[in-house]
Every structure is written in C-alpha cells, then in structure tokens.
Image (tube, rainbow, N blue to C red; front, side):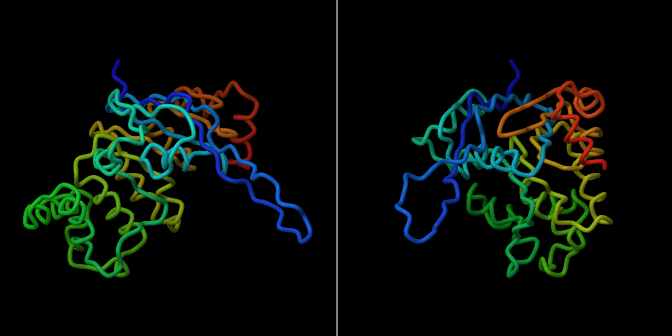
Length: 259
C-alpha cells in the first residue's frame, strides 16, 4: 500500500442557520452535514483533484485534512497515523503539509522574502540566514527571484499566488493541499499559476487539489473525485469522470459548468 493520505468515514457538520424570529421558543440547534462519510486515498507522488459545485464539501475536506477544522467522526491517516486524534500536536502535523488558499493570505506589512521565510524560522526553527536562503531559492523556483524585496501589494494576483505556493513548498511538505487557487485571479493570470502546478505535478509532488478548472484537472490529475452533498459521488481517471461519467448527477454538473 502506497497511500500517503487516507480518509475513512470522515464526517463534518456545522450548526445550521436558525430562524431568529421574535416570539419563537428556542429549539435545539440543528447541524448541517458538510462531509458525510468521506473515504478517499491519495498515493505518494500522485495528484487527486476534487471537483463539484459550491457547497459540495471540497474546501471543508481540505481544511479537515490540514486540521484547521475538527472532524465529528472518522479517521485521517497521514502515512498510517491517525492525525485526527486530538491528543496529537496539530502544529507538528501541519508542518508536514503545505496549504494554499483561495485568498493569498500573505502578510501585507512583510516583504515577499519574509513571508516565505517565516515558517522555516518559526515552525522548523531554522537559523534566519538559512531560512532566507531557502526562501530565495523557492522564490526563484516559482519565477519570483526578482520580487524578493517587494511587498505583496506590489505584486500582481498571479505573482501573489505564486508567492503563496512558494511559502507552502519551502518546508518540503509531504503533501500539498490547494484550495481553488485560481478563483481569485483575473482570467489572464490563471494560466501562469496552473502552469506552475503542472510543473510541480511533473516533479512528483503529492497533491490534493480542489478546483473548478476542468482543463487543469484533465492535464494533471491521476484521479478526479466528484463531490456531491458531502460524499464522493464518482471517482476515476479524468477521462472517465469528465468525459464519460457514469452518474447522472456528475453529467448534470458538467453540463452546467460548460453551458
């Protein structure tokens, strides 16, 4: 078995919105199911892409893997260890992963170099000079060697997202999590970020990616998982899921996406 990440029966709920009408007696808070028994495997050096409509659970799945949200039930096995165990040090687990969000989440008052060097210094306790050298090298790798002294607001959206990817990669994570990383970009900037991700995939990075870019999914995914109502509704190769889906709900989603 070559699974780096395995999810078994993962369930996550949130409080449902409540009617605050005057004069009504309070009732026990209901729960909205976001992940409803997810089973999923990501093998080493493979790329699994999550697709699905807004609210299908893609972002929540990434957040629970990165221990930003606690699960209600189920196991999250990272290299065989159940990292959902609340007795574990969540920060130590997160240090083994890199996550890139929809928003760039760069610190605006810090130079790009300092943004990328921060985690090596604070999390991995690397000397400042060593952390900066690693940050410079990673920024060079993503095509931003000329922007190391710039501040985030001096970068384009595509450059900011590439800086965020450099920050996620600088610690050499075992697993890279990417959440709709092109959704906040202008259309002309999407290509440069997707090209970088394709290069990372070609290098053998282990990646779990939520995206609405079907062309990217076809290009880089080893497996595509279509999420619907918090469940893996259909899975397979990009050709199977995106070109010849078996489930009616998958076909409906793809029709709406292309119409």
